[in-house]
Image (cartoon, rainbow, N blue to C red; front, side, top):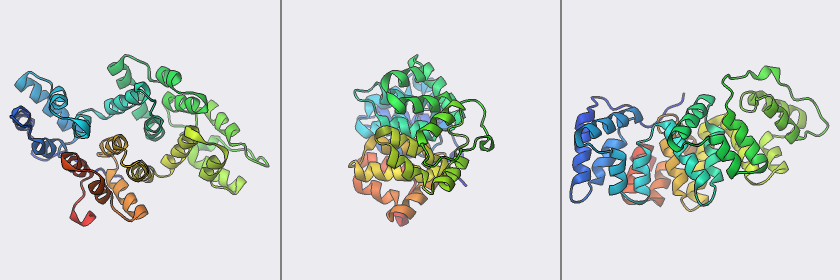
Length: 310
């Protein structure tokens, strides 16, 4: 059973919350603890209602006020919480594609893990927010097989295709690329994958991830592996990505923030469980170890850990 860490607050009063936020943002020094206590303890739809009440009350935009009063990673967290999910994905993709350097890992995380409906909504949000077509931007900012596969994922055919109609033919040695292309042509990359994994292993005697790692390198390889891992077990994939972001990259803030916010109402509790099972230490412990100040407090509030997690 999938479970997030943030739920709708009971006895929710958007007007009172907007008032508290207004007081916190307009004081001589910004009361960051109040912002954390309110925004991390309300679900996304409640935060949007607070923003509406805030606009009615003060005639100003809450997101703009957060941006003006906060700085660094703490600002990224608080502002990120205010986006509806599809808009947040669109915002992250836009910055990944249009920043100084293309952030391939952000593209992989989002496009390999989202459902067809999530991708459809994210494309709509992208067009609305940036007046650009997501697929055109992927086409112009990436290249090679990596680009082709991202484009395929971003197509999101409307219907889920059952895997039974697609079978891997036997070959003495399996050329993974040929099958990949065949699946792409049939628009079945994401949908028929569980059968393909099994069939691949039956025929080649090799795990699909090992085969991908042997055949390919670079971001294309990372993308193929991400697709496989997401189909197998999404919370495990995100636990692995968080662990890498925290330990391999010296706390890659953007990745940690993006995953915690994007999964907070979907499966972050499961991600926490997988993290602890796989790496021994809890996600709560590792965030506490690497982050500090109000930024740390905000991340831990989203993670929703407690003392025994430490």
